[in-house]
Length: 142
Image 1: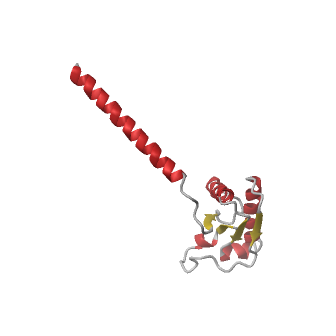
Image 2: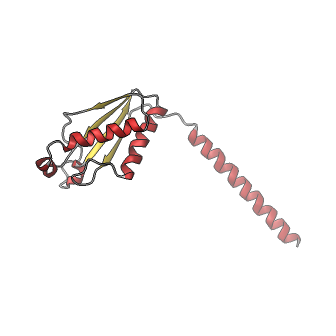
């Protein structure tokens, strides 16, 4: 019985030490200062769609949260459409930008949202996959 008791006390002590270590580690991660540079994120749209998926909404919320944590005054936005989408709907990229901008406002961002209507081709367009054309890029900045 003594061995069992000692074993349980030892396990309890080990669990307590582990819990304290994790708590200190989590606190250290939370208290780290935010990065000094702007944060850039990308989100993707379904084919021929200006609507945000639930995952895309989470990305927009993350950008708004990052802007609020950094006390950023603006979010810059560029939206794109694939060449075949533009052929069917020339205004699709603009409608995607408007959807993202509206979602940013719905999440309560009080700063300025700048839409780049003349954005050049999105990064990674050299890849022969139109997925990279169906995106919006958000950049949180001062």
